View 1 (cartoon, rainbow, N blue to C red):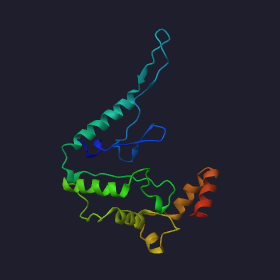
View 2: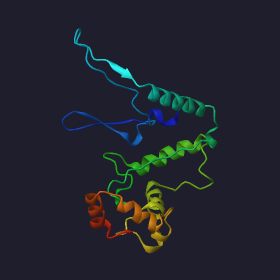
View 3: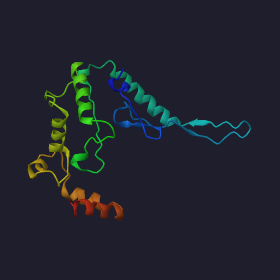
View 4: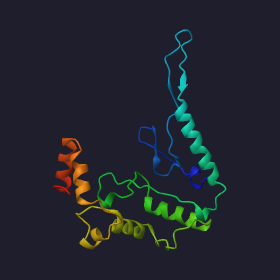
Length: 186
């Protein structure tokens, strides 16, 4: 069974409604496989109609996931996608009621203990160092980043590609981006 299928965070809000937070709920990305069909007026029952190509896609995905069980942990590749809704360094991994860096460090340690391969790199000693390492390589928040950090970014988009993509955006989106980051290439 996948390590993350049991990680689920459920918060109860002030008015007692439950809100599921997806940061660590073990979701495996999928697609809907059926949609509500017209109601049968003779018995007031709603039906769902399956969509064949989606069922096939989810079935193929399930087979691939099942194969992972037989693959050694050291050969599996896992990705953690952290929120960063504002694009600001201080918001990396931001989640209501969750200390994402500390949680990740516990998950990393558990994975390390059962043989997952971290590419020969030592794990950071704590969540603060983890986030700092991410900021050093992955953020584009020019407000807090140094020139050295910006130069050390893990990836870059060539200026001409950026400009072409930028020009394809709706005017409202372009205006918002220019306001946030300045004129292209931003």
